[in-house]
Image (spheres, chains in turn green, yellow):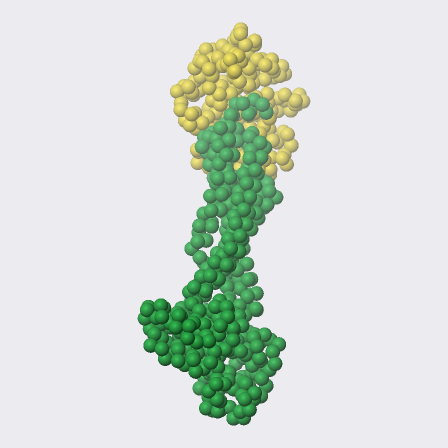
Length: 403
Length: 218
């Protein structure tokens, strides 16, 4: 027997009340942990996907849409950009690396991205199976696409127009899978990649081109289009020159991933702050509930406390007993809440994977979770302070004389 | 043994106890008699070290209680003084055995389940070790309270009105049991009572009368 077992015995004796308090605290803690896990991972992934990309050139429109559509593949593009102008920008001396993207089609919700091998290199893509595309209509698929659609090496599939499931299928030109990438936690996991020419070939029939094997030469220059250009600066000075140059001298616009993602996070941040505030209210009402429970229990327990004193307990021992009870409640609630938060994050991750969004997992530990546990423990101890002080002041003779 | 010298206690300015000096040999059995309101409970609390009297000296087992610091007094009470209260106040959240272990733990003694079970067995409670107090009959609960008071082998055993509300047969049983247990651990026994039925069973009587004229009867 020790203070912990005695505390536990008292908590068990009022199990309904104990359960309520634990649940209240667990819900608050779970909400905070869920937010923590989701925002940390979202932030991490968005950072990783945008790493090394200093500027995105796209059609005029919302710059955030340009970033969302061409880096994260979460939105529809603002439009296309002329091949010739894009080429000019690529050769600008302030540009170190330029990766063209041609978008527009998808397969079962996974976007088909027409690009160059530089795109794979930029993300350090590693092949689980097969190799990268060489000919038109050869495709490489991300790990999540492979898992979700069941496509294997050598399988053929038809892209459909647009980004949804319901677009018209381009049945005359099926793609063939020549490579499957390893899972890397980047945007590549959830897209299909092929050459730019493959994407152009889908629309060859509109241009009355029969043979698509050498489509780049068969197409007229003015029919060629990209959707976006991912740029890396040659030097820091480029940041001062290039965006203004592009915005002023072409029909295109330049969007900064760093600026736009920061803006996006500040918008999401308001919602996160509201949820976090709500979670804190939950945690503090749990604290209040623990306080009321312990305070009320003191009335029923005043004889127990007096008896413990007659059996030799010091006032400080009774104080510790009450503090321990608050702490124990808080820790059980806190640990349960953390577990619940991770479970919910994993559930959310599943739902997001189904919807082809940025994925989240519950199987990581964020160091801020220690602070959340400390917060829960602190709330438990603070809630027990006044009851503990009253236990400390128990008047043995007075209590026993009345009873 | 214990002794009381010139003990008085005042509460809210009014004298509630004015006790005659009292010397008891170690292992002796005493009745503390007096009508209700004569300060029996206050006297018991003073003897138990629960209440520090306003004036006077209390010595239990050669220890002057007034000389002890508050926490040393708590420790001394836990180790050397056992109390059976009129309303037994067993702790209902704990099992019978744990109620006894609690007495060892709170007194700062090593926990000794074997000793606790031995005491329970001597009071015919061996089968009730894992029961909760509310599952017991009044007689059983009273025996558990006695067991809890003697588990640390106290030098002084105090009982507050142990036989009130009991029929004659039960009254004798409870008295025998207290005398037995006190003898078993060599404790000095003081029973505070106004029960005339047990007067003849215990030789030493200490009588509290009106607050202002204390009087001892040997």
